Length: 466
Image (tube, rainbow, N blue to C red; front, side, top):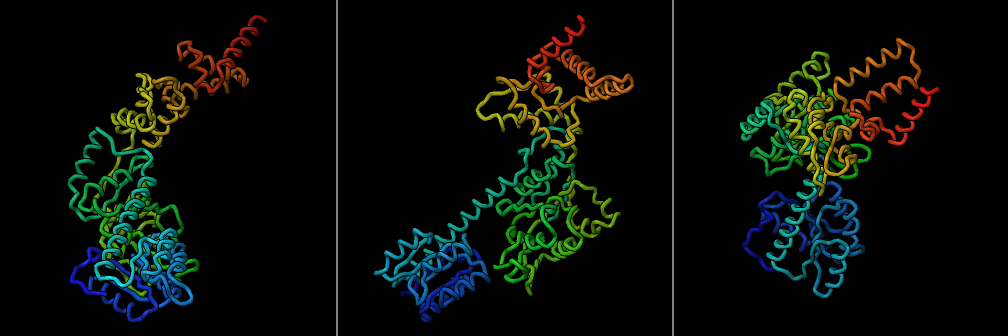
């Protein structure tokens, strides 16, 4: 093997390589080469030693000889695919064993190199493996982002309140300060958080979201800070936490108001001194992470009730962003409604009728934009042709004056001891009148078949003749 003064591109990132070879001289020489290139390298003389090392540490690449006593590189590859499926494996083989290397690649090896080789050949193979791993990691991150993305799409709004939020986000792009986003459920807190990340100097780093109510305290601590092998039952391998995954980027803590008090104190320490300690570890790991938190709770009330730490609140509330509910920015409703139609209509050209848009704009939307999106999606499924009418809107989308009428109708029915049949007939007739006599539209609102509606009318007429 010949030396080369070339510096590997892989050395531009902090990388860790596991070198597996039963030949001590070869193993030590490769470890020295990689360390000279600025990488962290660890040697293992057998498959068993390599698997033990892989359980303790998540290596970026494994470089292994294919022929070793007892078990060789192909056996190691099979077990690593189970233990560390995202870790690329580069195999080394003598020229006469190329068939074995090709078979190993069919089983999932990233690449192979033949002995004897030059330094540049080894480093180039490792560079390719590192680049592939970085690309796959980015693809996984983007898929997770898509899966976890807010259900009501991109940030949209022309109301003064939303324009103020946009202006604030633009101003804080260069800030490292923590951000606390407040607002009711469904207002778009995660969309705001993503916008904060994408307009900041950290936009090239990862955006890592986690819901603080989705898991128990112990599991959430492990997810945030990671754990070492053997830290608790089931910790079969060392795992990086989300703080490390978000290093250089943004960690989004959704529903921070539901975080357990014990974990609040640990988060506070990280915000005060950016160092995390994985569960079971004896030493900490420095991180560079911007924390964006969100909650639909009144944290000041939570503080007064003793459920949230006041010092953590002030650490998080460096840059507060409050999202008003949709009912307080009704001018945004038409924009959002049309956005959701484009999102869910596919190839169809669908428009809102004037009455339907007026109805949508008048509603309180307790579930905010998420509820609005659900209403639009349902209307698209029910509407005929390319027009959404009032009759296509879900039953929950009832205008306030209609709700008041129904309440008064129930009071009259109770006072006059109406039968259920009388109440149904009165309500049915009222719906028909509000639909201008259009029984097809009335049947949709009532949730019954049009023929059933006609039969009810015929039955009432027959009773009147008697």
